[in-house]
Image (cartoon, rainbow, N blue to C red; front, side, top):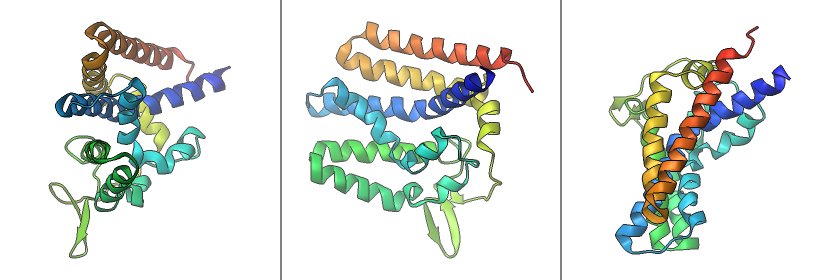
Length: 212
């Protein structure tokens, strides 16, 4: 029972860590549809959240199997190279979906990379290499030691922390606005309340689960 509960908490922590990117992706689709006068279905609005998570697709399976140890390594894959993935994802979306969705995809993926940049999150993404150095948006990129995924979840997400509080708060607002634009303020606020309710349940469960 305890092992099952710990696995559920692990998965919940991953979901919480992904939530802000997903919520902003939803908001991007909703805002762009209004700005450009394009009608969208609910699944298309939600697809913005999936597009914002594209850079993490390379490790999604390993993470949910519990086989992924560090946080630093996936920021060194091609999926976390903005100068590679941004044009590739944007072109693929334009080819299969057209100009509107190409712009949406670019904005969603670009947001993900900004969120992974030091100063916005607690990571430091390499945007490009020049003169033998790795560069972030704000100058040379500092190296840092890999953080075990389980430790990161337990200290940043499964407890109230500056990271979790700010990201859940901003994500809730983004989701409420994104959904509210097309489906009403009440539904947007209800979803935001459900997010906070689920978050509090996760925090309380982690707090009271017997520790080793």
